[in-house]
Image (cartoon, rainbow, N blue to C red; front, side):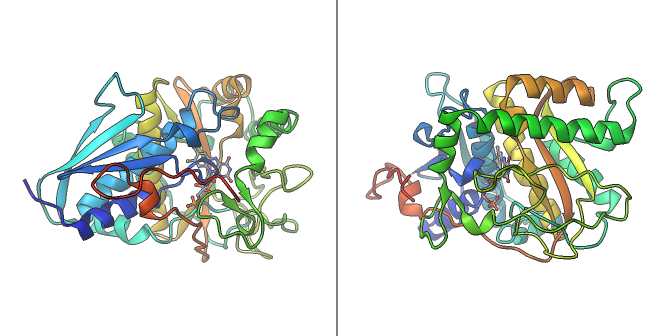
Length: 357
Ligand SMILES: Cc1cc2nc3c(=O)[nH]c(=O)nc-3n(C[C@H](O)[C@H](O)[C@H](O)COP(=O)(O)O)c2cc1C
């Protein structure tokens, strides 16, 4: 079996650690044992009020797991992955080790190259449509990871509902879910702990610059009337408004496509599949300078999650809503240093919890 050097191990973990995570909690720990890297969810970083069952914690860890696998591929190694290997250890998300050697193909190399600039987009997009064949490739990525990416305009929506009415109802569900969260003091307090003020040097949480102010009126994309989901306001504005700053600013356009990521079942393994799908398809998109805005508020409430399911006629379980568009910006949110992420592998510091702003 191939042996990883210290530098190669660090490369693999760094790729995993660039994964998206709910509120940039980065709720993961890595333990290196020979050539095996174990990924554990960190329950201290779970949002206990917003994410009571740890579903989004696991989606985040699934995203990191995809990063680990891709990290091995970047070294020309074929990863073998064991998902949830020990029922007695539910936080042990997976074990990955190299099973052999094979050079990366072009598509894999593109994913690796997209890791540094993949980011969650907020706000207006740059003009330009997202190619239908790219959207089809993103759906293939989701399917390859055991999830489904369904474009809203292809949904088998509630009988007889017109496209515009469906869009209005989806926006209404996001608004209602956001309002429900704003009225819950525990969720509001929890959110505050993860939003970082301007100038903060924190290596986790959502920086103020990534949220920003709402933009002016968005210009509709070329597809006519835009479906623009309100974005999570992170407690920064009075109400949720379209957009944020990370976007392409004045003159920017609405998203080109809206999709829902779902899974057939709704157990921890499915949440991990969703996360792997999310990271994989986000990187595929980023390789073409297409980025996703994520909206998970309606899926965080049992009631509105069911409404999303009914509205879009899903047979499975919605995990996350995504909107895609082009962008020329690539701001990178901070990440925790590896010293904090690695536990128990010979001399590295034990896990440090850094919730402070
Ligand atoms: C499960 C999950 C849910 C998320 N939900 C939202 C959301 O509702 N609104 C949002 O703006 N970003 C959402 N995000 C994106 C995170 O805020 C983002 O990944 C994190 O801040 C790190 O930033 P990056 O993706 O740019 O690296 C979500 C990410 C994950 C993994």
